[in-house]
Length: 500
Image (cartoon, rainbow, N blue to C red; front, side, top):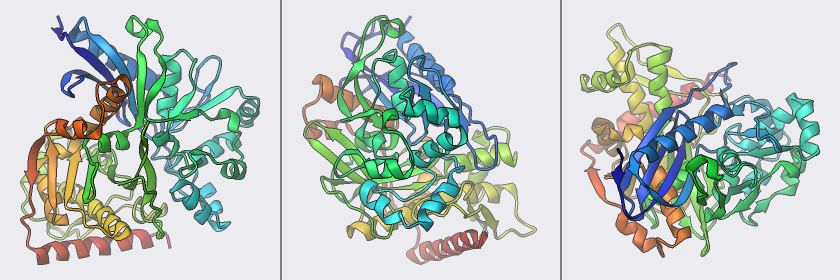
């Protein structure tokens, strides 16, 4: 029998790359229950990453029902959706059935399209309009690839029979039984088709990429009324009161509302963001992305973001690809048993390099191996690579804004590793804070839904919800820090020169 809660609750759907997790929150931001279902990826060709949209839907529905089953007579005030971003889904507008596999954000199949766009000189146009760099990471070239690969899909798209959406839009369509085709500002800003200054789909980019505007969802603020769930899913209609991309949701849940703060999420990739308020900052060097942090009735908040494409996926590769261990828990144990790493470095360019390099041709590299190198060295080098990549992004952030970041707030699965977080603090020379509630993605979405239904009135109330769990302070000698980082930069350079 589930636990009884007399107060109103918020159902937060957190659809990620490797699992679908649903949490039930009180209006005070505390967790009541949760449930998770794993989600598989397929790799049909080198650099290709796909998922089954129907499996995505089934996993989120199973998780939602699992979380609700743990609460006796839940009184829900709202549903919130947060999602893996950029992942591209096309579906039949009438039947809601997928028209193709979901092309996941990590997928690199549209690299050729991106190279051609860059060769034709469209990099500045894309950066100025969207705040992004031309890269297969984003949805636009994934859509173009699908429509070029499958002429039947293009014909249906032109006829208005196909809908496009990131995962949030697809879940919204399913939850509302096809009545609503919409997305929020944050997810729209990750498509490489959205003008983040004018806050509308960009006609010139749509024409350039030969994408019919008929397939696009309507764009709304992150905190607003998107529609109602069909009664068949949760027993009655429920208002869907927030939608937001997962990294922006984490930024909101970490209460990073002020200058000199940033958050870093250690998931499949590593995502470091800092808000810039109402100021839309475009990095002239193209190292960082300008993105929309969230949209409220009071206006739009912007952020700068740097994405390392491989973090948790590095550990998965060590486990499944190299078969160094059988269970994930062994990875942490192996890293603990090794004090120093004997100059072994691992550049995890498994799908190229993201920020601040944006080098799709870079390849993974392990360097410094000797006859004394063991699997412990490889595991430790993989873990340390996560922290080095985060420093790369953090330095680019400080360079772009001209402000020093004093505090890095952390979340995501790997943030639970105390040794890793201590090394992160050491290698950046800054304070690292982990909150009591590390499910900040689901929390951020729930808090935004709370805004919509009147549970919250201002950001000050949200700030009070954030509680420190553990703080890490740098202990490493500065000379050692810079020596280690210098060797990392050398390894990255070698990784990038591989394809030249």
